[in-house]
Image (cartoon, rainbow, N blue to C red; front, side, top):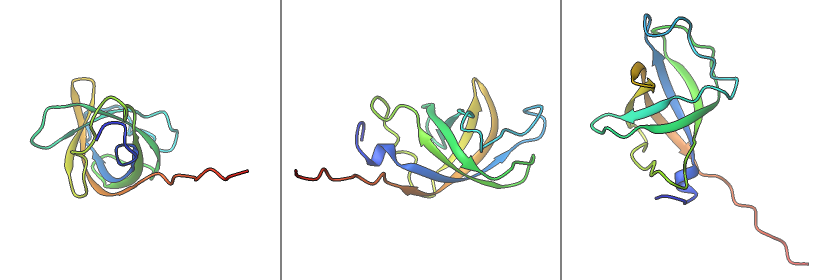
Length: 113
């Protein structure tokens, strides 16, 4: 649900980037790669940003961690465990992936003074 901790969950994903769709594989470790995921059977673009991950090679699986970019305005519920998705850069599908799991952010409780 929009605005919830679950909607802010870090997604553990396995991705494959296709040869011929990009000049070079993306860097998942820079924190600057922010494509869209489109879950199979849907049409909604879900903006995400990779936090870290493996070095990528074309047509080879890589593991990564991604976080929703718009958890307060977009519902990321379709990115549930085992959901399959395409990876889009603009209107171009550049790869595919699957959600392996989710980590809900830990809430720090305020201490009383």
